[in-house]
Image: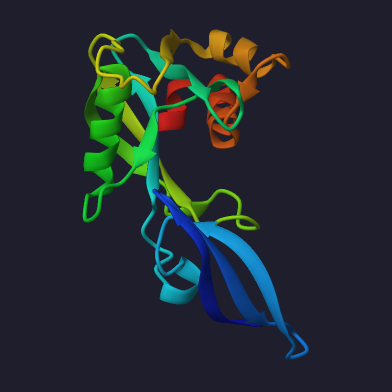
Length: 194
């Protein structure tokens, strides 16, 4: 199988819908519709290694707690539990974007990055968007005063037991990667970050 070309169907700020033509296993030309933040999409450019966004998994060492946010998400039509996240600006380093987004959404400061994932793909059947998970030590007092008018965020500092209780709830919405990180923290505690 191989990708042949991508044609723009429609373009709006931050997102472009493409019709991708590709060759299947029998040499037949087929089409796939997909969304990308890039132009051309990564299946054409080959630029798969740089993430589009960072998700920060913040550990407040002084409080010995995980920082969890509850944020209203338009596509879900409800609040979602997760972590601070945001797009990387062109040419911006992952750690810089993580610190900027962390500060904008929670008022906390990035102390250090323990580790981060490579670019990982969220939903490869629909989009080529990728993120990097940034596991970080943070400090400061949580605040939402830097949030924009289109962000409604509540910040929680949670210990292992609180996180475990949260992850067991079935009446709330989670970001997929956030739930996995919360579950690991509930099982491993601070050791999850080292």
